[in-house]
Image (tube, rainbow, N blue to C red; front, side, top):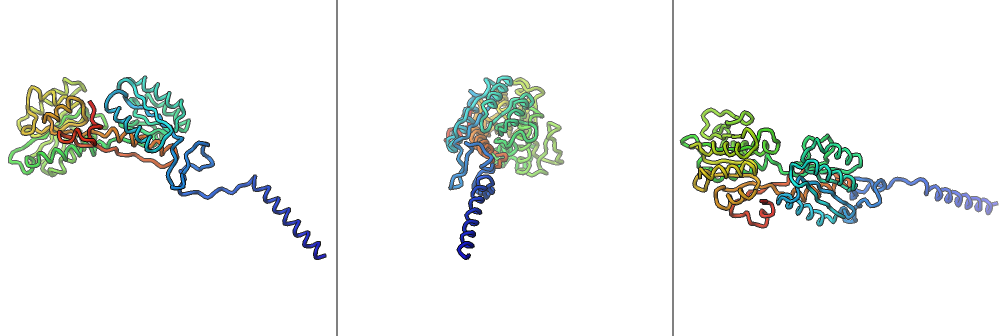
Length: 380
């Protein structure tokens, strides 16, 4: 009897094990989340989705990134491309493809390139849009396909909420402040309790562009902070005017009525001809070029004359810095723009959290413009 009971128990245990073993192929408890894995759950990802290595590093070898710039042949975009390719190499991406239209007015060409990029079904897209409104259908198609878009350079302003996962771009307000800091170092003695009123000119391309407005506002705010707000007023344009009774330093903002060379040269000439002008700042390549052009007949700019500071580069501005006509300029860092845009795209494609990145800016003058750090960021 005892043997029968033992045999029965043995058979029951064997049957139970078989049932449990058979069920295990149908019902599987979810694996515990790994702190080292990407945000996307492994079981929900495509077969080639990157996975965390044992070290915690992400494997990006299956990631492809399409990069649609505002241009292709200009030295600025060549520097952006250089940075993008370096990021792809450092991260070990499967591929990147850099395209751009012939010039920055070729909106239709860029839209075609963006559509082609979406149709390739890449892991992510980097976009510097010439016209956000014209790009909306393409952006919507990318969203529907689950392709994250990273904005770079000027990004994709006014894009629908959630369409752009992050931006890699210059903080133009900070960059304008850097221009003020470097100018202040040169003119400090002239603006510290001057006996007579002195004037700092600002040539700004327009009053509507966000990036130009930030560069202009950043310069003005930083300069007023350095000089002392009660001692520095702003005049010339309603957007920036700040009344400061008894101020001995005046920041005078000039904005051309139209964005063309002749109108800008006229504004720059008007400022350069003011007898109390000690320094002048131009907030982009367009205004810096025309400020230098205005000076050709006036000969007001120079080391021991009116201190001129520009923004961006371009052949006219670079030559002016080399010759000492301009004390120096601010350049964006196009290499970092490309590098950080691709890095953000790779991270977004693997489900990682991403946020906007300031790609920085650099001060250059005759002493450092040929350095390994600065030279790749200057364009003609």
